[in-house]
Image (cartoon, rainbow, N blue to C red; front, side, top):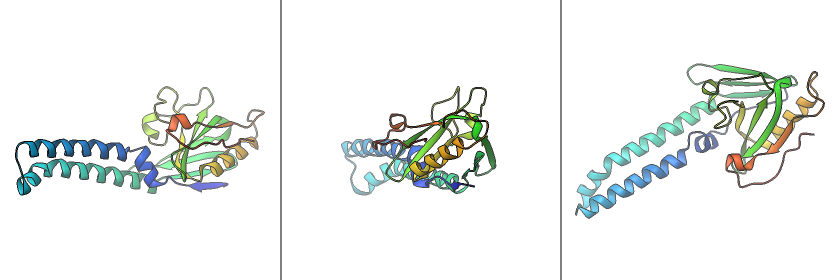
Length: 198
């Protein structure tokens, strides 16, 4: 085993479960409800009563998403060995994806913040996984050719380097190491830099 880790739960909550977007959504609904109630002349306890349900729904939804992100991160284990990448995940039903390194054609690195990032792996033609089964451990919006992904791991540059190094030493792979590129535009990343595959 060369590396083992799991997603950073807060980064997973932000980028896979979209907690920030949901917070903004419910914040706008609450603001609209407060403005509407104030325009109707409601004050004090009446105003509070009129805005209670949007607040309760919003807090419940955000809390549920945070809990799901935490449970998913806790139930996930990514492993890189000299021969394969293994993704174990599943809160209720444990699943394992066993990906031999020779099945990886390329990998890209996307940073979600200064401490976490994701490494999706493009598989060789003919190798397929189920997008629905592997979510959220797949690259977003790649339905026709799903790419398994080490999602929101800490120190993604070091993990990408280990992956490329193991791939290059695997018998039966192509002559060159997989291309590990910085796919910032695909991940909404504001940071720059490229993890070398060599």
